[in-house]
Length: 120
Image (cartoon, rainbow, N blue to C red; front, side, top):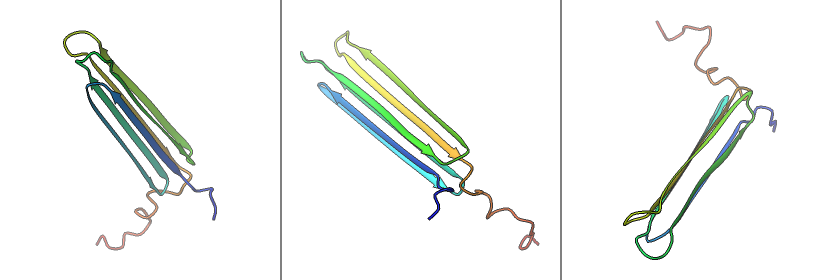
């Protein structure tokens, strides 16, 4: 098996929250086809704490792609903490997007050709 035309995408995410009321959600997805590999990950963590104990949130995403001629990746993290007021809250989010293309074959090779057979 030759790996010279192999494209790979992998994505991971994690979310943790501690406090009185918590919510976490993580989603990942990958797509690989002829000449392209794409990955996406999102994580959200929320906590509120109206009691005497503290609250904490943490959301993280990561991923990698390889094998193409052009590779792109971007991770964005956002955090909001309000320890004041009747209900202190904490919110963390993280998003990662990555892609690579080229080198794994032509993704349009089966759709384009010199023949007009079947059109008329």
